Amino acid sequence: MYALLILDIQVGLIHGPEKPWRCDELLETLNTLMDKARSAGAPIFLARHIGPAGSPIEPGSPLTLVAEELKLLGGEVVFEKRRPNAFAMTDLADNLRSSGATGVVVTGMKTQYCVDSTCRAARDLGFDAVLIADGHTCFDTPLMKAEAIVTHHNATLNGPFCQLVQAEDWSF
Image (cartoon, rainbow, N blue to C red; front, side, top):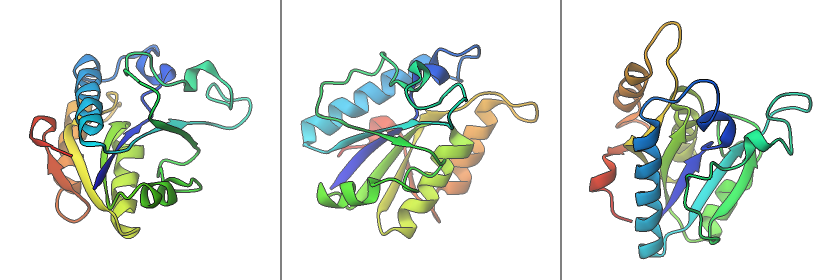
């Protein structure tokens, strides 16, 4: 069984001064994936990135709350993380195993940080990793447009680190 993992779809990133690339489409895709997971009885995990005290995303900051555009129904597991890799210093791996999941479907933000490092770590921890090609995003950087970052990571991660699948083609 595969679990759905949604990384850092939180107020400070979705409603910040800059809009993530394809943000509205991503939110719709994530809600559709949650519906698919629920229908299949697959667990859903949502990570919230928390920063150090004094930072804009310090513990308790409203910027770390899950974005209201995600349609949560109450059965999801929401957890905090402090590193880009969602497995680092969290109980995600244990919770996946205890839920019966042998694989994890990775989605969310930001492509080049948390999505990348979590995909790479999943297989090292013994999980089958799936990256939803149209299920993650980021912002433009001074060196690259967000679209190019997403395309590059989809190509780089596919194969050695995960299986790349379009959201419409994925079934739990």
